[in-house]
Image (tube, rainbow, N blue to C red; front, top):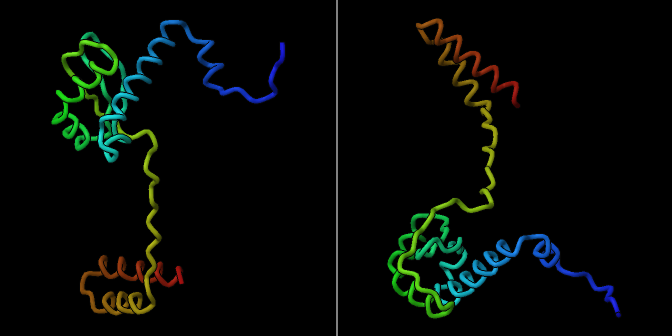
Length: 149
């Protein structure tokens, strides 16, 4: 028997470790996704994922309300097409909304810098301020701005 040195896909090894029932469910979800991808508009495909079948319901996971609304408008067409493609008798479609898997990167705001002109204006305002507590706060802000320079 000849063994190839070519690498084998990891998915193949993982599937062998799963039970027959889990493999059948994975295949079902793949088939559902393929059927969905063939009938959904390209702009909607990345926002919709097949989750499986629960009784007579097609269960889909979408990443937001806008995608869910579009899918609801197409519900009857989707069910009819999936039934025809896979020989099923689904009657309903259930949508679960879940956020996208990859979190959006958080942007850290740039530290705010106080210009020297602004620091001078704060000092001038502090000198003319009758309220001493407020004048001290303005002076502290002006000093902090001067330290950042």
